[in-house]
Amino acid sequence: MTKRFILVLLVLLAVVSYGIQFKRNIEERIEVMRDGSAIIKRTEFIPESELTKPYITHYEEMQKNKDVFNNFLNELTKHYYLLYGTTPSFTMNDMKITRDSKGYTCTITMKVPGIVRSQGGSFLIIRKGFENEKLAEKLMPKYFENEIDGKIFESAFLQSEKNSLLTERKVEIVLPSGSQLEDIKPNFFSKSLSDSWSVDMGGGTTYKAELKKTETGILISEKIVTNGGIPKNLLDEKRSIEVLQALRDYTAFSLVFSNKDMSEKNLTQPVAHKISSDFSGSWSFSVSTGELLSYTFTYQTLSVTPKITVTLSFTASLLWEHEWVRTGWLSWSYRFKKFESVVSLTPSLTPSLQVSSGGTVEKQWSKNLFTRGKTVTFWVGYVPVVLYLEAKLDAEATAKIYGSIGFTTWATFSVTTSLKVTYQNGSWSKTPSYSTSYSGVNFQANAKIGAEAEGKLPFTLSAYVYYVAGPFVKLTPWIKGATSASVGSSNQVGYTITGGLTASGGVQMAGWLKDLCGNIPSISYDFWEWSRTLASGTYTF
Image (cartoon, rainbow, N blue to C red; front, top):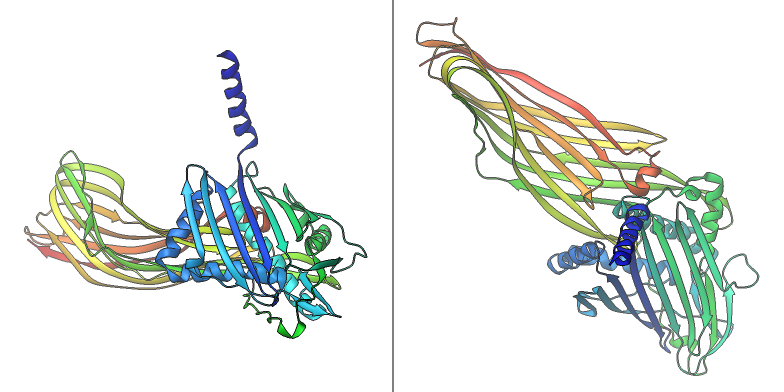
């Protein structure tokens, strides 16, 4: 029993000290046909862990939303295009998903035309060669972007440098029956092909691969580790040249074979892929309560009820750009050029305040009224990304009452606002915009007494990747009523109604993106404030 306890304790200490290593296994079988096309069977398995949750969420959203599937189709086929210079195709019917106590498995069967080229009487399968220098110059930086963007999201999921993700991938290329493997040539500078490759991004993120010949073709075995730590080698401008050269050469070769049953004129043609520049995405979320949300705060004889009717929609976007400094033929240095997030919203707000007091009292309160969210998922590189759009509404109130009184006040605010936060050239900047108006101001009271009360109804809108990083905006409408017993006749009370809006926001950073932006964990601004005396005068009760 003592030995077992010590073993369990050591395991727990290891987890605390060294973090968690998530695992992912990918097996690809590329069966080449005699017409130069191929059938790709891709099976991905994720052992049961926190990593399975994004995959499950993504698949559930794909079933409900065609745009989610189209994004997945685009990203996954882009991966093959960047490797083989042609674009596969598949549908939802070509996917099989299973989940059990062991984990999550996704098997996809794809058809890809034109994976085989012809040259000098032989046939070639070119991996990361892009057929010619001109195409390689154009697409190689896109390959780098695809790898780095995927690592940015993977590291956000990992959250900490103590955690890592191990991807073990096996790629088997099966040549058509009757084929004779003639040669395996390097695509770029090496005179002879290496049977192993490695890339070290720094901070624990590494690539390793080995190539072996089989009776029917070749087998590539890879181990890719993504760590949440700083990719120091990539960020070092001089060392990044070596990193990108190693990534360029990583598993890059041309497979040369002959087959007497194949004909050059019968080969299918490759299909190009429409590749976007860098990463960007925009998502929207609408909250229409259709109800008066309120909460009554009480203390002794005092009750204060802030209320609000909210109808709003907000849009959040993320964008970043990579910059490539060319250092030679098919050679680049890496720089992170720009990160930007934007949150825009257009709410209609009717805050109101009800106060009832039987004596002199002073108090302040706060309370959450509701939290509503929408899950958005998309695919970048090799990983499903889960974005959570959330709207959270709170209520706050303060009151200073100098006798028995009750009063009610309300107004309607309309506002259009956005906050753009940008990191570029080593510093942050903000670009806020807003316009506001108010209408429908009202006041009612039942006694002539001195009093003041204020109700705030702040709501926070956020778009967080894996619930940890992304842009947010907090908008706080408020309304305040104050009465004066010294104004008016015995059945009149003087009153003043003030109200307004304050806004703050920024972006929470995590993972590689935090490191790329100078290791700044987050940035937040109070970016505008608007206040008015909405009405004043006397009220007869």
